[in-house]
Amino acid sequence: MRTSRFFLSTSKEAPAEAELVSHKLMLRAGLIKRLGSGLYTWMPLGLRVLRKVEAIVREEMDRAGAIELLMPAVIPAELWQESGRWDVFGPQMLKIKDRHERDFLFGPTHEEVITDIARKEIRSYRQLPVNFYQIQTKFRDEIRPRFGVMRAREFLMKDAYSFHADAASLDETYCAMYDTYSRIFTRLGLKFRAVAADTGAIGGSGSHEFHVLADSGEDAIAFCPNSDYAANVEMAEALPPTGSRPAPGQAMQEVATPGKHSIAEVSAFLGVPADKVVKTLIVKGEKGLIALLLRGDHALNEVKAGKLTGVFSPLTFASDAEVHAAVGCPPGSIGPVGLKLPIIADRALMNLADFVCGANAAGYHLTGVNFGRDLPEPMFADIRNVVEGDPSPDGKGQLGLCRGIEVGHIFKLGTKYSEALQAKFLDEQGKSQTMIMGCYGIGVSRIVAAAIEQGHDERGIVFPPSIAPFELAIVALGYRKNPAVKEAADALYNQLKAADIDVVLDDRDERPGVMFADMELIGVPHRVVVSERGLKEGQLEYQGRQDATATKLPQAEAAKQIE
Ligand code: ATP
Ligand code: MG
Ligand code: MG
Ligand code: MG
Image (tube, rainbow, N blue to C red; front, top):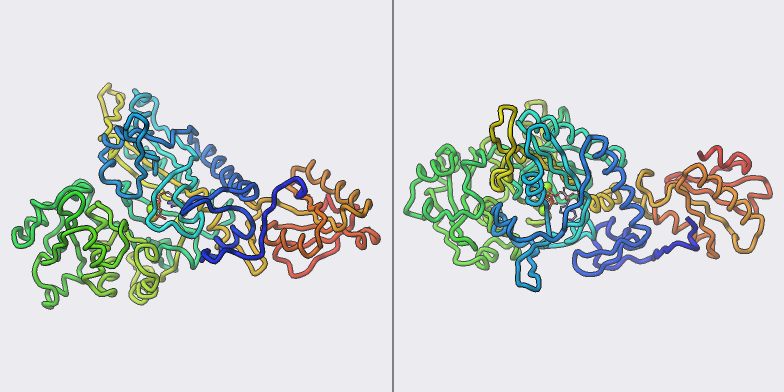
């Protein structure tokens, strides 16, 4: 590529609204342009980076035996009504109508569509296991789109879905995906960590998130420095099995009305020991009365100490708006899903330390909250005060706390979708069985921002070489005026291209300072300068993106040495 035939749109200033360094640099380097809230155009330069990330993800998924397909972004409502998610997914779902007034949604995730494929295409155990994936645009109407493509509304995701005849087969693919993700993030040149995670609104048992470690991350990760133990503080590891929990959106009215139902009734309904149900907050949500509040041993001790009294909170909110006002979170952050609600509401009832102890108790963990997103920033310091130094659950040391950016998430879904959509196959005995599923997501576009959070300096982006927009820049000083420079630069450019190096030749009629600054800003890892002065001595100049000084490179051997 030659800069004269490409489209660079770098700038010195970043728009004031950009808070994160990656957002600022992506705008300044001209990787992306904002169209509207959470909506970005990938400019030619940014697209090169995005495509490189995508290629690594695709290669590793293919290597692991996953099979690529491409599903529609627009999905008929019927499928989501069949799974039950049409009504409970919440305000993140963009619902649309066609000209016939039929309901559709713009897919925030694709479990239903792929399960529909499976139920129609898979008949026999001989066709299992199978792992389908796509790399496709998703839309989620996030409450607070921010940080550029980090938390966008429209974004690129790799989502994979596996189907199995039995749990052992799911375990095998889950492990293979865990390894594949580790390879992907290693090849992407990122510092990352796999952590035990909440299964959120997708549901299921067993889940890991992959986090790029960065101080700007929205998630808080408790980890043990002496072992592999790491958990998202929002994790719900010890919640009772899905079957015994109320279905999302299920009205709690008959089960728990203040003053009407006993703690024994609530515990029986939830399938949790009575001593874990300490306090229930009843909130009137879109779907009726929802929400319950489970506390760990810490809260139990509080009850014993007489600090918390009664089984049910006398609080009854009349409307969502009142809930929002009472707990101080923006409308939309409280979804209609019961299990997400109380945690946010919890904050209004408990002080911060209690909140975090509850989240970290042996009995029950809080779920569904992303610090910094759903709760104000100072929370992190508060969590740190409480979590740091606590014994790690595996007994191998004391917990530390760090921040992470979620770039991947793998789940064992079980039969949640296959049961709802009746995805069945005939086993070896000819008996009809429900397929078992797993699902595996990667935030392809978010990775670009996450990589920049980890790789930057005062001059701009320091991309890992595997995803830099170009591997090497030849900066030709005086290309348009000096035939010797032109000749030498063209020759090197052609040699490197022939050697399959992704090289950019800066042949613009710009001042040297401008050319250097641009190549540094956009994060090209290697730079070779061709100048009249150097050529007179038969020398070029080489400088790595993070090198303090340049080194001489004999012109005759330059191409060989670079290769
Ligand atoms: P988050 O906790 O950040 O909201 P999520 O848990 O809702 O993410 P998943 O449903 O697990 O996201 O989707 C798989 C991946 O898609 C995530 O791990 C993340 O990398 C990416 N992703 C999710 N939401 C967004 C978004 N709004 N913008 C960019 N990438 C996203
Ligand atoms: Mg989310
Ligand atoms: Mg998450
Ligand atoms: Mg997730």
